[in-house]
Amino acid sequence: MTKSWTVREVLGWTKDYFRRSGIEAARLEAEILLSHALRADRLELYLRPERVLTDPERLDFKKLIRQRHEGTPLQYLIGEVDFFGCRLKVSPVALIPRPETEELVERIVKDFFSSKISPSWILDLGTGTGAIAIALARAFKHAQILAVDLSEGALGLASENARENGVEARVRFLRSDWYENVSGVFDLIVSNPPYVPREELEHLQTEVKKEPAIALDGGPDGLEAIAHIVSRSVEFLRPPGRLYLEMGDKQASRVRELIEQAETFHLDILRDIAGKERFVRAERLAPRNISTFAEQE
Ligand code: GLN
Image 1 (cartoon, helix red, strand yellow):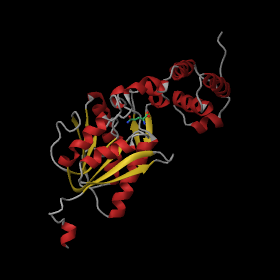
Image 2: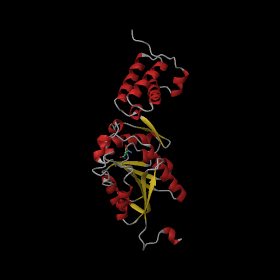
Image 3: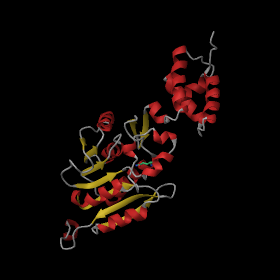
Image 4: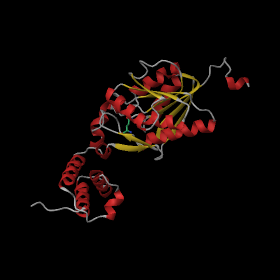
């Protein structure tokens, strides 16, 4: 006869198992996965610690902890994340949205709110789960967003996320290799492109290696995608449009050089919450001999 396992016992066992696998937040992850397997919230685990798991529950949970032990990210097992107030589905077809990217969205929203302009046309390059596009659609209620990705799988996931978050009418998804199939001009271009230098890919955490390489691999110096996005941004931004990018924490000076080559930008490097130079904000200046609408007033 197999032993019957209570919630309390299962949590204790899993915490030790995860700790031995090198998972830092072992107890928390055990709770999150168990509540997922039991389709209950975490509080339930505390309220009914003596509840005995049914056989199917025990088997489901066992499968989850084995995958977690083998390095599958927690978020892929749970199947969703919270991102800037949106609930997003995640799967191995797309990068798991990071807190840094949430910071980028927050920064964009704050900047536009304080300048009292609202972007009408937004382009999100390499949308993945659709995180940035969807969060911006919810923040800027009148904006139209074009979100592109090369991966069909990502576009499918992102469209589903847009529907679930009620913004499908204002976010259009398009399969495109960066700007390739994009036309029109935008007030805001944003991207969290792949920026990991290729030779660092093999040294990434096991969890990150389970994420799609297309979302991480930034070419030999990590700057391939960023350089391309910057080089053509002038064509797609109408002054005083802005470009916001996430980048690697050692890439600021190279990215600065790339943008300064374009000359028509006012540039700021912004730090993330950990103090690392993580984002770039570039504003496209109007050509000198053409006065802007604001200047005429
Ligand atoms: N921040 C991610 C990581 O370190 C990289 C994301 C990206 O390349 N856009 O795993």
